[in-house]
Length: 301
Length: 225
Image (tube, rainbow over all chains, first blue to last red; front, side, top):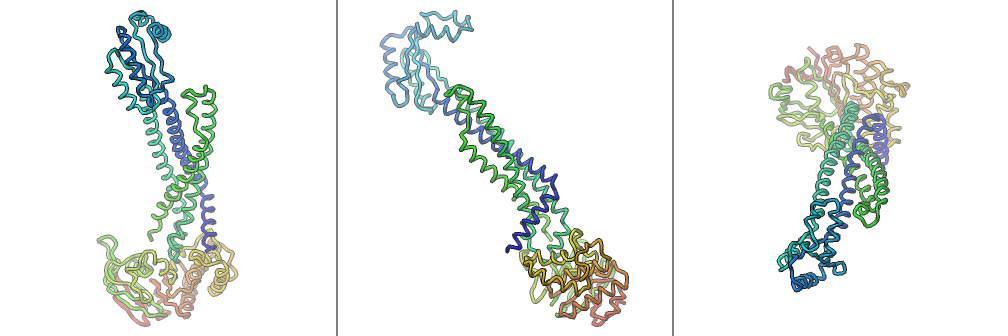
């Protein structure tokens, strides 16, 4: 048994060194592919963080008709206060006409045409409502309810940017995932080709091995180990790059004010380690499987 | 030891390599397979070591029908057979000793067994003082002796030789034949394909003659004709 194991490792190492250039190509390709896979994981995680942060900030503005009566305004106020589990009542604010006009002057400072259409009399007063929940459908149904109240002019839901972020993250996730899958296939192909070349160079040896009665597994195992080693090194290289990338990213992002959306893009280091382990595993597995497939084609004697 | 029953082997649909071949070779016999190139000699040998499977008929080796032998058992069948080829099939980057040891190494024999079994075989083939040479430092006859040593080191029941003297001059060929005869004397069944009529006529052993895949003669103590 020991003789067999020693043989397998000796053969693996000899073949690994003999095809150094091809090996380097296979290792680099798998490293790049795995780096992309890892980056996908990180991007996904960062966007998830961002979404959690942003969904906490979805704000609803209930505009009150400028001719609404005081009773109507207080009805709106009561209705909003009737659901304290959904609405963050401590952040609930009512802006009267004067306050609304002040805010409008600030918002439309660069847009005098729009501002000129607004007067302190014609401007609607407004309730600023901050939901507690990130559940957009719940918030949306609540906004429908407010809209049906008398005296309500319009309910503006700041969920558009939320939608943009989640669409964007979905898009990026799909693109990077597809790219990394394609590259992963390419990497397996390259490892497969390396092993095939190694086997072709040794076809006489394999023929002799088969004729003196070596089992297929005995012949295959050194090649599989070689593929596994290539994949593992590829994985390790990609982990290194991923770590550098993430450090640079974390450094850059941490310069932003804490609590803003951007600063939530930092990925926790525990998650990073998890991704690295996954990359090493994928690399090793892909290498071993690729070379097992390559080896099988030469063993049909 | 080796029995064929109505064996037919075709390559593709057109070329018939062996047609309806039957023979029975008892243990310890020495048999020549003769016939012109392309008459099916090599195919017969390849059917016996399961490099090929017959289309029809049965191949029996050591009392076992190898047609239905699962692929995973084929290596164990081959451990009972030694193969010798016209082109030696030595590994150029290994020494004489390593080439012979390789046959034991790849069937998982431990180092101490290898060190015990290889030297006597090299001694038997007359290469005891060349163990550290590489194949390209040897003559054709010496290379063939290495290949015979490799085939015999595991003490197989059967030796299959495909034109072992084909690349050698007559005198060197005689040496090789003497070696195969010695191996036969130890009890191994030897089957040798050749179109070298001198060695056949000199040995006067059983001769199976093939012509375009058909056995046309099976004669005890025969000559080449």
